[in-house]
Image (cartoon, rainbow, N blue to C red):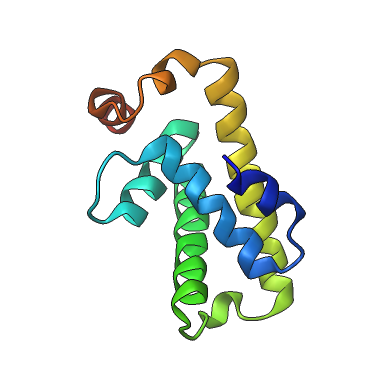
Length: 128
């Protein structure tokens, strides 16, 4: 979880956002293959809430993935997060998602996460 402290102190917004992704992957990814979709979906289902809240979480994580991918691969950044104000907003949103997930994982679900990539746990997130 060395990515978390780096994300918290980084002042370059695209890098700050990018460093939150490995934190989420360490909790919600067990295999290769469309990881960005799976992690985004699992984050949304894990935090729960209304359909609108889940969709907002899904979009925040997905947009963060997109920004990270474009940053690390040298591509053009999506216009929706191309200006500093939008990057700051996305940074705040992904930080809040990560904080909520870590708080819940540590205080409530620590035993589930100690097992590591448990497919049963991930499936239960989607179908409960």
